[in-house]
Image (cartoon, rainbow, N blue to C red; front, side, top):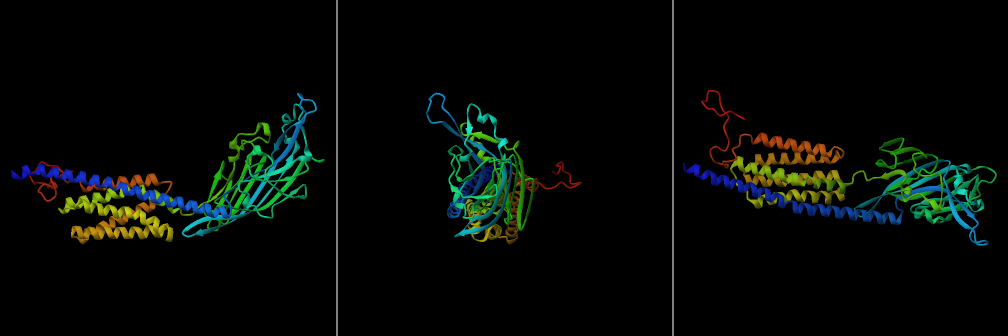
Length: 459
């Protein structure tokens, strides 16, 4: 009878312990978020170093064009004898072929890396006078073909080398720096050319060596464009308004080919400086990004998102140890275990900056799992349970590593882990009497035996 009166008080004590464990788990989210901030800060620093290296080499490159710039003028009907009104007409190639061969390498500054490349590029095609919209020459406008220029937009002209050359109708032309068309809002180079002199089309071929970093993109400028990029980088990411028609990626490099029609280009074949396309036309490019094969800052930041799950599951295991073994675990001991789990994510990014993500993950997981299991064995005074906790913690870290690698299936994998963990917990506690604390009779309801003379049915 005395035990029955004590049971509600003890049950209330058990409920208080559950609340304390939950609060401790929530408290551990604060240092976990601080660690996430440190990881993001290190990632930002890595980006700054990458930008510094690119600043001494060249930034990511985008080639737009070439454009045939055709000055046009007409007399001012309102002011006789005044200077004629002028504007610039832009004509795109009739057919356009671009090939780029990239040699990519990694440059380092301290523990930070940046991907840079040197590209051998050839642009070829032709301009057809018949592609010029006749409406652009209405109302008295006339061309000044002797002032025509061929212009090429280069996002970072610092990457241009001395071998830049243009062959126009079989003749070499000297290059000039700058883009003589402010309405295009581009940096680049241009060449003065003679257009439509006897023939209705003009052929061109541009060859260059271009330095850059991180990415290379091309504008499909022709009515029919054939673009190809190849290189020695084994982890490319194809980017832009369309995916390549064909591509091949292997450990030795990659190759990709695009074919883009003017119908899919969303850019007119010709226009004037008075009626320029919207600013979005500059983004109608295709190309490749030279990705770091293992972006450990991104992987580390993603792993922190599972930190709350790790803390919750580990605290739950310790709580069950209390119930099953009748050993009281102090809240400070919970905090120490939670601190070890948080430090795992900090050590992960610290080691990854030196030895790489996979090795850093394995080393950090081994250290933290060993610390927690040895501490649990000392607290519980049972080596077997400490070994069991080591196996469970190692399995959790192994599952997290697989989830991080399965980026596209991360949500599905994480959900399955939660479902399995919940099912295991439900199965392990199916006979636990939560109203009676550990160490008291009735803590677990016994399985009913046949012929035992009881009406209680097993779960």
